[in-house]
Amino acid sequence: MHEPISEEEIWKAISKVKYPALDRALVELDMVKDLIVKITKVIVTIALPFPSSPIINKIVRSVKKPLEELGFKAEVKITLMSKEEKEKFLGMEKDTLKEL
Image (cartoon, rainbow, N blue to C red; front, side, top):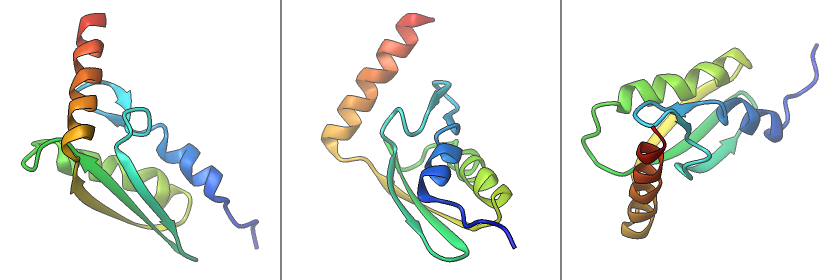
C-alpha cells in the first residue's frame, strides 16, 4: 500500500497544465477555481473566458491526465469567468503576446 497523495501534490501536478493559446499555466492565469479531493476522485473547476472556446476539450484532457497518472478518477467542470476575471485574463493575454 502506498502513501496517500496530499492536496499539495495534486496542485503541483495540475500547476504544470498550460493554457494552449498562451503557453502559460492555468494556475498562473487564475483559471483553476476549485479543487475538491475525495478518496479516489478529484474534481477540478476551470473558468474559461468564453463559453465556446475551441480548446475546451484539450484543456479537460490536459487537466485529467496528471490526475489520472496519480491514480485518481478526474472530473473537470467548466465555468465562465466573471467580467472582472475576464478583463484580468485578457490583460495577461495581451502582456504575453507582447513578450512574443
